[in-house]
Image (cartoon, rainbow, N blue to C red):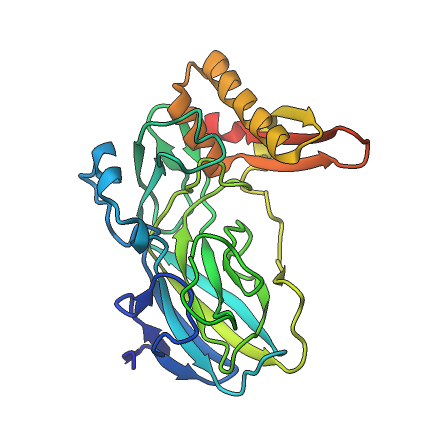
Length: 316
């Protein structure tokens, strides 16, 4: 069992696992309505330090990515119920990383070489994070991986999101948001981790500003109310930290949404190179940590429009 501390229990980061499995040993049992703080490791489990270089990407164990703290057994939770998780607070560590990982990301074929960007940022998340001499990225801490154990037996990879949540990487799973997850196993078996200091919608290069944080949540149980897939309510507004100076927007147009998304992001990387003289690796990372992919049109067959919005406030 985890230690107790503060006004509510803290589950320490040593109690983590990689992959989903409903047979993993429990860390703690909690009651509906209880508030818990989870110490969350970053997506690399602390592999990167302030002295790391791009060469360290090759030594990252792929089986150790996205560790999540847990699992927690919720008293009374049964298949068919809904778990309501209110994100009360996130306390960032002040250090993070972003990376281009060979074979991973929307444009992996265009960026085959490893590249690491380290970040030191304001732990209160009030000041933008400096991206070298290129830009200043406004922060919005959130939890990237949050979910419940699936009913199917055995170990399931942690990278793909699932019906029960997991690695959803939704930027708006931030403080104040209420997330509803479908329970598939007795006790729900809740875990969370993969916390981020900032990310654009799409996380196009495969990483955000990956950063360890303390995540505080309140867990409630709603009987017989499981949604088909996760849903959430956010207090909003969701882009106020980015909206102040408008956007640069590129598009991709065609019959395939994935191809159109790739074209929209590639277009922005080209635009940043011409407009800001930004190296393509830096432009790709910047797109991932603050730019938003949007489906702008999906009804005018046979072609759809995907837009990529990059906030100009990062250059202010």
